[in-house]
Amino acid sequence: MTIECHRIEKTDHLVLTGEKAWHGLGTVVEEAPTPGQALSLAKLDWEVEEHDIATGNGLEIQSHKALTRSDTGDLLSVVGHNYRPLQNDELAMFCYDVADKADVRIETAGSLRGGKRVWFLIRGDTLFADKRETDATVPYMMLYNSHDQSSSLEFMPSGIRVVCQNTMTLARERGDYTGMKFKHTQSLLDRVQLATHAIREGFAHLKTWNDKVREMNTAEISDHQVNDIMLDAYDLMYGKPSKAVALDEKKSNRHSMKRVDRVQEWKDILHRELHTHNLARTAWTTANAVTNWIDHDMKVKLNSKSSHNGLGEAREFNNWFGMAAKHKAKVMSLIGC
Image (cartoon, rainbow, N blue to C red; front, side):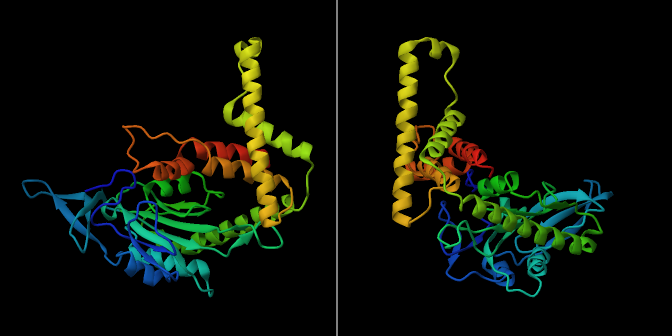
């Protein structure tokens, strides 16, 4: 049975380092595995087998072939004759190539849609937004492959921990660097060096982004600047009042009061965070106070038609894919992120 929200079927599995995913599936391990270990733990140690296909009367179809799983025999796809499947262990080997001589570890790995889509998520070195190393960001590099022609072989950096179809989609759509894609042709493996270079360049891009954040987080700003950022954030999230509202004194006043009250909530969060963690008042900490409110305090609705198992799951989904995610992207764009 397919669980629609994350596309993990009964023949799929995944491995996760440190903590379980929101859907509660997969094997959780304390220490990040190597790509080879992840291949086994995520039960990806099966091969894509190629088969000739024929018509009902036995006539061979030379233009196409069928791909199946070696462990279950399930059909993965029917592809053109020149299609070059990339085996799961080959994808794991790419992870080693990325690290060169360094020790490479996997954050998550697994399959979706009955093995038709496979990923490995490499954990990069932790980046810090401040020199005291109190504000941490973990960059990831996702290696993504399909056995059903739904995508090319893809390499992309991401700040998102991929644990299911939804987070994978978000990682692919919102990567900080576009990465590279390679079609499943016969020359696929000949381009490993180019792919490896793209991945290393992607990690370098994330470090450049981190340097930019560090620079942004070293310059303290005034209360007036904090107020301006938060007012702009409110307007980006909720829009400025319409002409009709602006011309109606009562409606205009209500809008203004709501705006002021919300900004005060964000200021309270900022002051609490600065005091609790001994942080500086910067554009970075200001924007993060707003996104903190979005993640934890913004109202989330759960109705009878919702597929979420409680408000907690609904909030997490909203933070990743719903209006909350869109709001956070708008807020961060204010400070150039």
